[in-house]
Amino acid sequence: MIKNPIRLLVNGVIVSFGLLPLLAQAQQPVSNTQVAAMVEALRRAAPQTKNANDGLYSEWQVKPETLKGWSKTCLKREITPTQFENSPAIARQVISCITRRELSNQFRATNNNEIASVRGAACWWMTGSYTGCEKGFTADYVQKVVRFYQQQR
Image 1 (tube, rainbow, N blue to C red):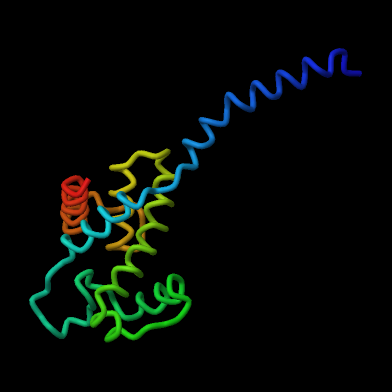
Image 2 (tube, rainbow, N blue to C red; image 1 turned 180 degrees about the horizontal axis):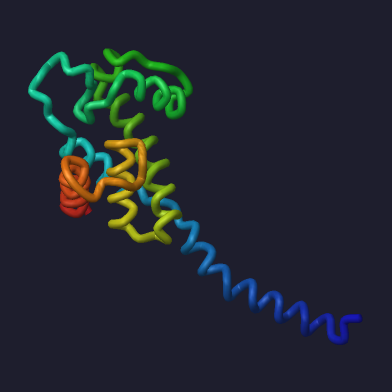
């Protein structure tokens, strides 16, 4: 039997209001500024093969098979690599959509650590995995993305 239901209710309200700011901070979405900085960092860090027929499309150097899924996710329709290559606006829209998703995933995974999130998203961008980019070419790539991101921010 509850001895003092009003006191219990008041305590519950106080605890709830005390936790609201913490919950809001923990679930804070990635800002448009952060997404734009990451999109630009990925564009600037994209490996340049110096081969016009390298099978990669747009300034972000995206594989056709990757583009299929991304365009379906972000545009609700598939687009061809040529459409992606020839429309910077569409390319940026798709890249921004995927970047927002992956950066948000990393912000949640790293407890809102911005640079760790950028590192994880950059690693995922290059390898499909959030980890494993601590040495070699992928480490250099991730470091370039982080540097370009910081310049944009």
